[in-house]
Structure formats: C-alpha cells, structure tokens
Amino acid sequence: EPEVTQTPSHQVTQMGQEVILRCVPISNHLYFYWYRQILGQKVEFLVSFYNNEISEKSEIFDDQFSVERPDGSNFTLKIRSTKLEDSAMYFCASSSRTDTQYFGPGTRLTVL
Amino acid sequence: GNSVTQMEGPVTLSEEAFLTINCTYTATGYPSLFWYVQYPGEGLQLLLKATKADDKGSNKGFEATYRKETTSFHLEKGSVQVSDSAVYFCALSDKNTDKLIFGTGTRLQVFP
Image (tube, rainbow over the protein chains, first blue to last red):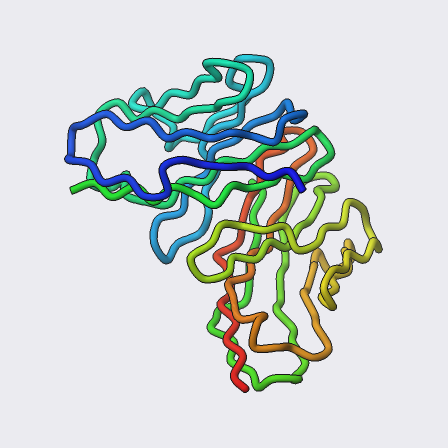
C-alpha cells in the first residue's frame, strides 16, 4: 500500500539555524499539507499546498516558514531561523481530494 | 470558527471491555469527520471516517456514527484489546478549506 514518507525521523538543531524537513507524498496525490504537534498537545494545521502554490496557511506559518515542491516527488518545509518553540513533531500529509489525508510518520524536531 | 472537543483521557480499560470516546464538533455547514489513531512512537493513521449525516464509519471493530442533531461522532468498540492502546484523535474537515482540525486526543490504555 502506498504511503507518505518523511526524512529525517529526528532532527536536532541549534536555535537560529535553518532546517529543511522532507516529505515524499503518495505518488498520485495532488494536495499536500504540513501539521505540527508540540509534545502533549493537539495536532495543528500549518499549511496546505496545491498546484505549486500555498492554498491556505495558519497564523503559525509566519515568514520563518516556507514550503516547496522542488521536483515531482518531494515536498519540503523550511524553517529559516529556528526558535526553541519550534520544537515539535512535524507531520506531512497528502490527499487526492477525496477528503482523506494520509499522514507520514513525522519528523521530530528538537531545537536546542 | 470550527472546533472539535474530545473527552479527556487517559481512558483505562481491561481487555474485552466496551470503549466509548466522546467527540463533539462545532462547524458551519457539513464537515467530514474522522478518527485518527497514533500508536506509541508512530504517526497518525486514519482509523475511520464519515462524510455526511447518519453515515457510519467502521474499521478494525471500531465504529462511529455522524450525528448531525447532536453534532457528535463518538468512537466505540465492543471489545478492546491491549494492542488498541494508543492516542485517538477526532478531526473534522471543512469542505471549503479541507484543512483538518483536530481534537486534543484521548489516550487509551488497555490492560490484560
């Protein structure tokens, strides 16, 4: 069964550094999403992406964040200058516009 | 705005006990409703969904019925197993935006 994959599984970085989180969505999907889950809290929507542009973004998704689909398979989330409060599990999801989003296993980001 | 409210956890049950996890929602229009499950150390997996009123979603012995009149989507299972121990998230998808809005999650612990 096709699945969403994410790399790395765990990323440790220093405050102020840039990080790029990578996702490979399910191959025939056209809608892509990033969510995050701060430890012990609810899963929060960050951004949705379709047709090479952002469809919607939350207030969390400020100028420090960007997304890109650099080729036909990858979907990336970049945080330009990480803050301690960016420490969280980041989930990528994709869908084929049937309401159902399929999630990857997540990348745990730790900012020191 | 749209929101999802779940019962507080943890829910602690013995094996073969009956499970109910309550979920209610607030939304404009007619959202799609989902239950996702997160096993320890893993990402979010879709458990079941319902897209319109009175629909029943079911999977792996779990069921939930979309109740428009009570704005609820309670998760039930007749006989839980130790392997069902996980965090369960109720979520809705607004058809206008298709981002998922999650509840806070309910941790289920099943003991032999």
